[in-house]
Image 1 (spheres, helix red, strand yellow):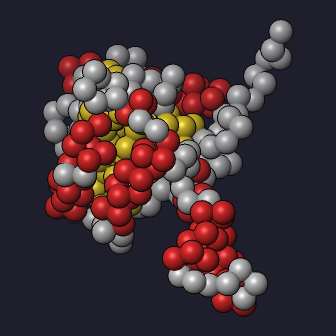
Image 2 (cartoon, helix red, strand yellow):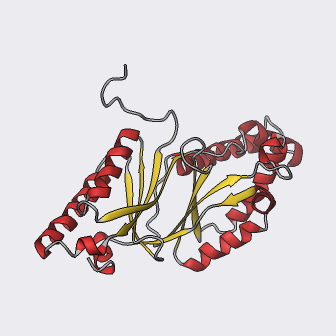
Length: 273
């Protein structure tokens, strides 16, 4: 029998939870001003407490459309912490004040289609005619290893940016009769994903992407979180991706949620709480 509160930490990656709520203003207005202030202080203290936890990050979002009013993005290793924090956030302003309208659970991960050291060494030797025993080859391989270490850190153990515009949606690969991603040979899938990545790199410095895996954890197969300094870049990258075969022929998308990263005091003012 599992010991009580034994940490539920994945072998690789961190848990990622997106939470979106509607504020029940009718219930909120039943509280007097003192009770409202206590409730807001409670939420602010909880967010501060969570942000002080090891390897844990929390974003507070003011949602732009009526799909939701307030959102949170949480990244932390232990599933117990994810569970406890979610319950506390839901009740942080008091009973029946925050109604969940959407949530999504996933894990940070690295792509299964990344270039391996063997692949890169082969490229240097066969395509760039660099001899394996040369100093140039050794330097190129060292640079590649450093680059991949940085890539893995960004994907598996990321640091969330403070860019103001945050977009979230889920996606899955098609498994239909005409288009079945999982029926394609690995090499073909890998080739398609390399082309897909090229489109993403065109937005370097404009959009930061965090792709998290959710197969078996939630309704779709991936969660996609985009960070940008304005909505134009969000629209541009999603539009350009639609023309890539990976998206055009093999991808299905969920609803899109747009939020603005705000400190809680400004978020409370924006929500008129």
